[in-house]
Length: 133
Image (cartoon, rainbow, N blue to C red):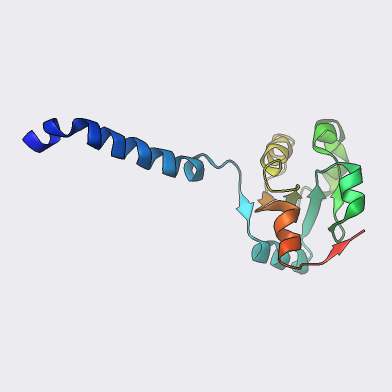
């Protein structure tokens, strides 16, 4: 007990630093899929890929057969995806950060099976996976 009282600041510092290290993984919002999982889901044909980048970025290169609805327009245009509610949706952005916002919009619209692509299109390209223009 004396050890704990004498070293309370060190123990508090250790707990705080541990919490800060675990924070990002605990707070990670939404479901994510790895590149391998995404390619498997796409190859099974039961998945729709939604690219939420700008039309200019989409035109520069995107995942094959992806649909483009920019993140800012998604709440207004989510009805365009209603026919795909029975399928899984993989949301793709530039680096995997914006896909969580898009996934929450889709979940509010009634989509149950929504995933963000880990690392976004940057990770997709880094692995040499095919893109279309």
